[in-house]
Amino acid sequence: MNSINSIVEDSCFILNEKFEGGIGLTSTKLKGYSGPALEKWCEMTIKLIIADLKEKYPNTVIEWDKSYIKSDYEGFSDERLDQHVKVNGKYAYLQEDRAWADKPFYTLKRAVIRNIMLSCESKLSSNVKFGLIGYCTDFKEEIINTCNFCQDYGDRIEVFSLTGRRRDIKVNGKNANWYETGFITETVVKYVEYVYKTLEDAILAK
Image 1 (cartoon, rainbow, N blue to C red):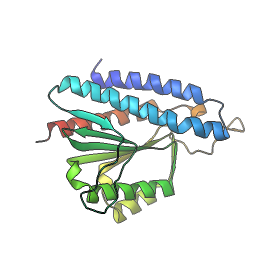
Image 2 (tube, rainbow, N blue to C red):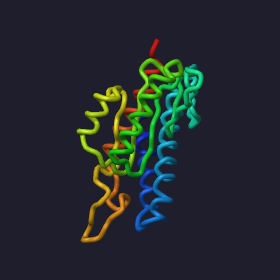
Image 3 (cartoon, helix red, strand yellow):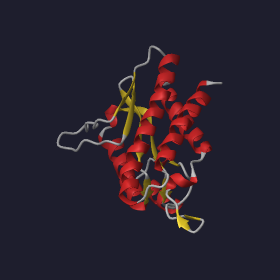
Image 4 (cartoon, rainbow, N blue to C red):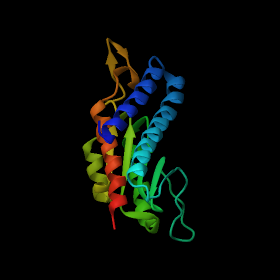
């Protein structure tokens, strides 16, 4: 088994536990569980990737954090997303986790990414990439196209919907939360491959 397959297997095992823990939850209990469960799974998966890359490239410094990124400009705001990974002191991968990401949320985070690209440029690796991951992503290709046109950097961001469905879905006539229809393993594979390649590209960059 190669390293990426091993990471995917471990990641899916952890994610399955998170999904099982959310079955039957509704309302406030669902909201209170969903966000932290997703964020913790993302953190654990990213750290599995980092551990593998550290073993593969022992002379490379790879750091995970959640702290704010200082602007290059005095009097400007600091910026952050939910997960940050630095390679040799430069931010190489930044990610936002959101249980349910709708059009306003996506638009807002595209603006934050633009802020980071323009205001924090000296802190970033030359090929920095971004990810947005959620259980459900309820926005259409049109808003992605609009943000690509108006806010730029569309080639640097990937979106991952773990369930591949909308939030409002019924199973046997009853509302089903996102845990009750399961996750798409292929999406986990694509996510792991994307983060792994992004970090490895940063390691190998001159």
